[in-house]
Length: 378
Image (cartoon, rainbow, N blue to C red; front, side, top):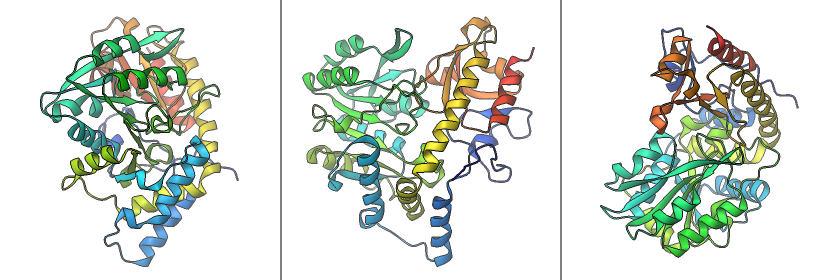
């Protein structure tokens, strides 16, 4: 079945977070990580059917077996991960989930290791929970971004470091950690009694044929020392429905996590559960078609950006987000430089890298071409 990702619905009148930022200005929004694509029909059909039924009362996520079964099916089929369904903990988003992890596994004054650059809510989480953030740098090795594992090993020796919050695939740089890297992370965490919380919300957006996502909790060395966070939200553009999940094989870690969220974190709503169920059972072909479209978008962006004097970008392995190095522009404010050309990317300063910006290319080819044309203008 053909899918037309060139035709995207207008966001006018929807109060879209992405589009409200530059409302009334001649600036194309290319920042927050939601796509412009219409949701797959099975997702929309499921929501329509429930709305037509007419009752939207309480649904306890643990009672909604079809969504639980859908998650298990997706992880087995796409990630070769055979989970015990008891490991699954529903959450209304990965942001409350990694904040819950901070609360669950740390006490006031403890330290949380976080890779940088990173997306703003993850950078903010330690301080929000009265914890100290320890930054672990992203480095370039053989033309590819990865975590500075030597720096991680050194930092983890501090007994106050109780938690590592990882983003894999890495946002904003787009790398997918390989087996050797994940094994080293496991060794470091296990040796130093550090819990790993792995935010893997972009794990189903692998664009590089040579990259394979490895879920943290699937690995034997991390099974009893990890919290793996996933969602259908980024892949299927249903972030506004507030549905994600944690996979926590270790019963003690799972109970600590659930207790930390109790009374503070609401249930996943029934439309989010429905959408996740449909996405993970009926949208495989749509998913593959979207990946093909995003690969072409990525390749166009890389070619065009690298032709603009002062800008450079790598061909990232995953996500629909491009991390653009604007240090060659020689300007004081690279975000202002982009906005003056009519493009609103995510500001690199918010990620910890003020000489960069992040471009969302999860959009129609026409919208992406307009973004690139504007950035190339004098």
